[in-house]
View (tube, rainbow, N blue to C red):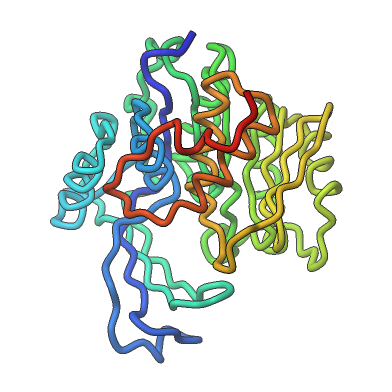
Amino acid sequence: MRRTIDILSAGELLMDFATADFAQTIEEGALFKRTPMGAPALLAIQMARLGNKAMLAATVGTDDMGKTLISYMKQMGVDASCVAQLEEPTTLILNTKSATESNIQVYRGADSMLSIRQFPFQSFEQIGVFHATCFALSKNPSQHVILQAAERAQRAGCIVSLDLNYTQKIFPDRIEAKKAVSEFARYKALIKLSAQDWRNLYEDTSPAPQAVIEHFLKIGAEGVCYISDEAFWVGNGQETHSLPFRNTSSPDTHTFMAGYLTARLDDKNLLDCAVAGRKMSEMQTSNADQVSREQIYSELEG
Protein backbone atom coordinates (compact mmCIF):
# COMPACT_ATOMS: atom_id res chain seq x y z
CA MET A 1 0.00 0.00 0.00
CA ARG A 2 1.46 3.33 -1.07
CA ARG A 3 1.81 6.12 1.45
CA THR A 4 0.38 9.65 1.20
CA ILE A 5 3.75 11.29 0.41
CA ASP A 6 5.91 9.26 -1.97
CA ILE A 7 9.21 11.04 -1.25
CA LEU A 8 10.59 13.62 1.13
CA SER A 9 13.88 14.78 -0.38
CA ALA A 10 16.14 16.77 1.94
CA GLY A 11 19.25 18.86 1.41
CA GLU A 12 20.67 21.44 -0.93
CA LEU A 13 18.54 23.76 -3.07
CA LEU A 14 20.78 26.27 -4.81
CA MET A 15 21.41 28.31 -7.94
CA ASP A 16 23.99 26.97 -10.36
CA PHE A 17 25.85 29.19 -12.83
CA ALA A 18 27.55 27.02 -15.47
CA THR A 19 29.72 28.16 -18.34
CA ALA A 20 27.78 28.33 -21.60
CA ASP A 21 30.67 26.62 -23.42
CA PHE A 22 33.13 23.90 -22.46
CA ALA A 23 35.88 25.24 -20.20
CA GLN A 24 38.60 23.85 -17.96
CA THR A 25 38.62 26.67 -15.39
CA ILE A 26 36.20 29.27 -14.09
CA GLU A 27 38.55 31.94 -15.45
CA GLU A 28 37.96 30.68 -18.98
CA GLY A 29 34.22 31.16 -18.65
CA ALA A 30 32.83 34.28 -20.27
CA LEU A 31 29.10 33.54 -20.19
CA PHE A 32 27.29 31.60 -17.46
CA LYS A 33 23.83 30.06 -17.62
CA ARG A 34 21.70 30.17 -14.48
CA THR A 35 19.91 26.93 -13.50
CA PRO A 36 18.06 25.90 -10.32
CA MET A 37 20.01 22.95 -8.90
CA GLY A 38 20.63 20.73 -5.91
CA ALA A 39 20.53 16.94 -6.10
CA PRO A 40 17.59 16.55 -3.67
CA ALA A 41 15.59 19.11 -5.64
CA LEU A 42 16.38 17.47 -8.99
CA LEU A 43 15.27 14.07 -7.72
CA ALA A 44 12.06 15.53 -6.30
CA ILE A 45 11.31 17.09 -9.69
CA GLN A 46 11.88 13.81 -11.51
CA MET A 47 9.70 11.94 -9.02
CA ALA A 48 6.93 14.52 -9.51
CA ARG A 49 7.16 14.07 -13.30
CA LEU A 50 6.24 10.42 -12.77
CA GLY A 51 3.11 11.39 -10.88
CA ASN A 52 4.55 10.89 -7.41
CA LYS A 53 3.73 13.17 -4.49
CA ALA A 54 7.15 14.79 -3.94
CA MET A 55 8.14 17.07 -1.06
CA LEU A 56 11.41 18.99 -0.55
CA ALA A 57 13.01 20.06 2.73
CA ALA A 58 15.69 22.71 2.16
CA THR A 59 16.83 26.17 3.21
CA VAL A 60 17.34 29.21 0.99
CA GLY A 61 17.76 32.91 1.60
CA THR A 62 15.11 35.60 1.76
CA ASP A 63 16.85 37.09 -1.28
CA ASP A 64 15.58 37.05 -4.85
CA MET A 65 17.47 33.83 -5.63
CA GLY A 66 15.70 32.05 -2.79
CA LYS A 67 12.29 33.26 -3.92
CA THR A 68 13.08 32.20 -7.48
CA LEU A 69 14.06 28.70 -6.37
CA ILE A 70 10.90 28.19 -4.31
CA SER A 71 8.77 29.42 -7.19
CA TYR A 72 10.55 27.06 -9.59
CA MET A 73 10.02 24.02 -7.36
CA LYS A 74 6.31 24.78 -7.12
CA GLN A 75 6.10 25.16 -10.90
CA MET A 76 7.72 21.71 -11.23
CA GLY A 77 4.99 20.18 -9.08
CA VAL A 78 7.03 19.74 -5.89
CA ASP A 79 5.58 20.52 -2.46
CA ALA A 80 7.87 23.27 -1.09
CA SER A 81 6.10 23.71 2.25
CA CYS A 82 9.21 22.36 4.06
CA VAL A 83 11.55 24.84 2.34
CA ALA A 84 12.54 27.58 4.79
CA GLN A 85 13.83 31.07 4.01
CA LEU A 86 16.57 32.51 6.22
CA GLU A 87 18.57 35.72 6.41
CA GLU A 88 21.63 33.80 5.14
CA PRO A 89 22.21 34.26 1.38
CA THR A 90 21.08 31.52 -0.99
CA THR A 91 23.91 29.13 -1.85
CA LEU A 92 25.43 29.63 -5.31
CA ILE A 93 27.78 27.51 -7.40
CA LEU A 94 29.94 28.50 -10.34
CA ASN A 95 31.03 25.58 -12.49
CA THR A 96 32.53 24.75 -15.82
CA LYS A 97 30.70 22.80 -18.49
CA SER A 98 32.68 19.59 -18.83
CA ALA A 99 32.41 16.20 -20.51
CA THR A 100 33.94 14.58 -17.38
CA GLU A 101 34.03 16.43 -14.06
CA SER A 102 33.18 20.09 -13.64
CA ASN A 103 35.49 22.54 -11.94
CA ILE A 104 33.32 24.15 -9.29
CA GLN A 105 33.48 27.09 -6.92
CA VAL A 106 30.87 27.01 -4.14
CA TYR A 107 29.54 30.08 -2.32
CA ARG A 108 27.77 28.46 0.61
CA GLY A 109 25.03 30.20 2.50
CA ALA A 110 21.63 29.00 3.63
CA ASP A 111 21.84 25.41 2.35
CA SER A 112 23.52 24.03 5.48
CA MET A 113 21.02 25.57 7.91
CA LEU A 114 18.34 22.87 7.93
CA SER A 115 16.31 22.81 11.14
CA ILE A 116 14.62 19.86 12.79
CA ARG A 117 11.44 21.98 12.83
CA GLN A 118 11.22 21.70 9.03
CA PHE A 119 10.61 17.95 9.12
CA PRO A 120 7.07 16.57 9.51
CA PHE A 121 8.09 13.80 11.90
CA GLN A 122 4.50 13.23 12.95
CA SER A 123 3.83 12.26 9.32
CA PHE A 124 6.84 10.01 8.64
CA GLU A 125 4.57 6.96 8.70
CA GLN A 126 2.91 8.48 5.61
CA ILE A 127 6.20 8.98 3.69
CA GLY A 128 7.45 6.34 1.27
CA VAL A 129 11.06 7.48 0.75
CA PHE A 130 13.29 9.73 2.80
CA HIS A 131 16.18 10.87 0.58
CA ALA A 132 19.26 12.97 1.38
CA THR A 133 22.72 13.72 -0.02
CA CYS A 134 26.38 13.71 0.91
CA PHE A 135 26.44 17.43 0.07
CA ALA A 136 23.86 18.06 2.80
CA LEU A 137 25.86 15.92 5.26
CA SER A 138 28.95 18.07 4.73
CA LYS A 139 28.16 20.75 7.29
CA ASN A 140 26.24 21.22 10.52
CA PRO A 141 23.54 21.83 11.53
CA SER A 142 22.22 20.08 8.40
CA GLN A 143 24.35 16.95 8.99
CA HIS A 144 22.99 16.42 12.49
CA VAL A 145 19.41 17.14 11.41
CA ILE A 146 19.51 14.78 8.42
CA LEU A 147 21.01 11.91 10.40
CA GLN A 148 18.31 12.36 13.03
CA ALA A 149 15.65 12.44 10.31
CA ALA A 150 17.09 9.30 8.68
CA GLU A 151 16.90 7.43 11.98
CA ARG A 152 13.26 8.43 12.51
CA ALA A 153 12.41 7.63 8.89
CA GLN A 154 13.87 4.14 9.20
CA ARG A 155 11.91 3.52 12.39
CA ALA A 156 8.75 4.67 10.58
CA GLY A 157 9.30 2.12 7.81
CA CYS A 158 10.40 4.57 5.10
CA ILE A 159 12.84 3.63 2.38
CA VAL A 160 15.94 5.60 3.43
CA SER A 161 18.06 6.75 0.49
CA LEU A 162 21.36 8.62 0.07
CA ASP A 163 22.93 10.24 -2.99
CA LEU A 164 26.69 10.02 -2.43
CA ASN A 165 27.41 13.18 -4.45
CA TYR A 166 30.79 13.77 -2.83
CA THR A 167 33.28 16.42 -3.92
CA GLN A 168 36.22 17.54 -1.80
CA LYS A 169 35.57 21.25 -2.36
CA ILE A 170 32.26 20.84 -0.56
CA PHE A 171 33.32 18.26 2.05
CA PRO A 172 37.12 18.74 2.52
CA ASP A 173 37.58 16.16 5.31
CA ARG A 174 37.33 12.72 3.68
CA ILE A 175 37.52 10.92 7.02
CA GLU A 176 34.56 12.89 8.33
CA ALA A 177 32.70 12.33 5.06
CA LYS A 178 33.20 8.56 5.24
CA LYS A 179 32.04 8.58 8.85
CA ALA A 180 28.85 10.47 7.96
CA VAL A 181 28.12 8.16 5.02
CA SER A 182 28.66 5.10 7.21
CA GLU A 183 26.33 6.47 9.89
CA PHE A 184 23.63 7.13 7.29
CA ALA A 185 24.11 3.71 5.69
CA ARG A 186 23.42 1.89 8.94
CA TYR A 187 19.79 2.99 8.76
CA LYS A 188 19.39 0.24 6.14
CA ALA A 189 19.87 2.87 3.46
CA LEU A 190 19.80 2.60 -0.30
CA ILE A 191 23.05 4.20 -1.54
CA LYS A 192 23.21 5.75 -5.01
CA LEU A 193 26.58 6.81 -6.41
CA SER A 194 28.50 7.23 -9.64
CA ALA A 195 31.98 5.99 -10.45
CA GLN A 196 33.20 9.58 -10.09
CA ASP A 197 31.61 9.85 -6.63
CA TRP A 198 33.49 6.70 -5.56
CA ARG A 199 36.78 7.99 -6.98
CA ASN A 200 36.30 11.34 -5.25
CA LEU A 201 35.60 9.92 -1.79
CA TYR A 202 37.61 6.70 -1.69
CA GLU A 203 40.47 7.76 -4.02
CA ASP A 204 40.16 4.52 -5.96
CA THR A 205 40.68 5.16 -9.67
CA SER A 206 39.68 1.67 -10.86
CA PRO A 207 36.65 0.61 -8.82
CA ALA A 208 35.25 -2.88 -9.34
CA PRO A 209 31.42 -2.60 -9.32
CA GLN A 210 30.90 -5.70 -7.19
CA ALA A 211 33.45 -4.46 -4.65
CA VAL A 212 31.72 -1.06 -4.48
CA ILE A 213 28.37 -2.72 -3.82
CA GLU A 214 29.84 -5.05 -1.19
CA HIS A 215 31.53 -2.14 0.61
CA PHE A 216 28.24 -0.40 1.31
CA LEU A 217 26.38 -3.58 2.18
CA LYS A 218 29.07 -4.36 4.77
CA ILE A 219 28.61 -1.00 6.51
CA GLY A 220 24.85 -1.48 6.84
CA ALA A 221 23.27 -0.41 3.56
CA GLU A 222 20.26 -2.40 2.37
CA GLY A 223 20.93 -1.82 -1.32
CA VAL A 224 23.22 -0.03 -3.76
CA CYS A 225 22.66 1.69 -7.11
CA TYR A 226 26.08 2.18 -8.69
CA ILE A 227 26.44 3.96 -12.02
CA SER A 228 29.79 2.82 -13.39
CA ASP A 229 31.43 4.19 -16.52
CA GLU A 230 29.67 1.55 -18.64
CA ALA A 231 26.54 0.33 -16.86
CA PHE A 232 23.93 0.64 -14.15
CA TRP A 233 24.60 -1.79 -11.30
CA VAL A 234 22.14 -2.69 -8.55
CA GLY A 235 22.66 -5.05 -5.64
CA ASN A 236 21.04 -5.92 -2.31
CA GLY A 237 23.10 -8.78 -0.92
CA GLN A 238 20.90 -11.50 -2.40
CA GLU A 239 21.28 -10.56 -6.05
CA THR A 240 23.22 -8.20 -8.29
CA HIS A 241 22.32 -7.00 -11.78
CA SER A 242 24.12 -4.98 -14.43
CA LEU A 243 22.42 -3.08 -17.26
CA PRO A 244 24.74 -1.62 -19.92
CA PHE A 245 24.27 1.91 -21.20
CA ARG A 246 22.43 2.09 -24.52
CA ASN A 247 22.96 5.79 -25.21
CA THR A 248 26.25 7.44 -26.15
CA SER A 249 25.60 10.40 -23.84
CA SER A 250 26.33 10.23 -20.13
CA PRO A 251 23.34 8.93 -18.16
CA ASP A 252 21.36 11.25 -15.93
CA THR A 253 21.62 9.72 -12.47
CA HIS A 254 18.66 11.67 -11.04
CA THR A 255 16.26 10.39 -13.69
CA PHE A 256 17.59 6.85 -13.18
CA MET A 257 16.96 7.11 -9.46
CA ALA A 258 13.45 8.49 -9.99
CA GLY A 259 12.55 5.53 -12.18
CA TYR A 260 14.18 3.09 -9.76
CA LEU A 261 12.45 4.50 -6.67
CA THR A 262 9.07 4.73 -8.38
CA ALA A 263 9.31 1.06 -9.30
CA ARG A 264 10.42 0.26 -5.75
CA LEU A 265 7.36 2.07 -4.38
CA ASP A 266 5.25 0.02 -6.81
CA ASP A 267 6.72 -3.19 -5.31
CA LYS A 268 8.73 -4.18 -8.40
CA ASN A 269 11.63 -6.59 -7.98
CA LEU A 270 15.26 -5.45 -8.04
CA LEU A 271 15.88 -6.08 -11.74
CA ASP A 272 12.62 -4.42 -12.77
CA CYS A 273 13.53 -1.37 -10.67
CA ALA A 274 16.84 -1.12 -12.54
CA VAL A 275 15.15 -1.56 -15.93
CA ALA A 276 12.63 1.17 -15.09
CA GLY A 277 15.44 3.45 -13.93
CA ARG A 278 17.43 2.93 -17.12
CA LYS A 279 14.35 3.58 -19.24
CA MET A 280 13.64 6.80 -17.36
CA SER A 281 17.25 7.95 -17.79
CA GLU A 282 17.05 7.39 -21.55
CA MET A 283 13.95 9.51 -22.08
CA GLN A 284 15.21 12.81 -23.44
CA THR A 285 12.43 15.13 -22.29
CA SER A 286 12.37 18.42 -20.44
CA ASN A 287 11.81 18.68 -16.71
CA ALA A 288 8.32 20.05 -17.32
CA ASP A 289 7.16 16.99 -19.28
CA GLN A 290 5.11 14.40 -17.44
CA VAL A 291 6.17 10.77 -17.78
CA SER A 292 3.82 7.85 -17.30
CA ARG A 293 4.59 4.68 -15.43
CA GLU A 294 3.57 2.77 -18.55
CA GLN A 295 6.51 4.38 -20.36
CA ILE A 296 9.16 3.40 -17.83
CA TYR A 297 7.63 -0.06 -17.36
CA SER A 298 7.35 -0.75 -21.10
CA GLU A 299 10.32 -3.15 -21.06
CA LEU A 300 9.22 -5.15 -18.04
CA GLU A 301 7.99 -8.68 -18.50
CA GLY A 302 4.46 -9.50 -17.48
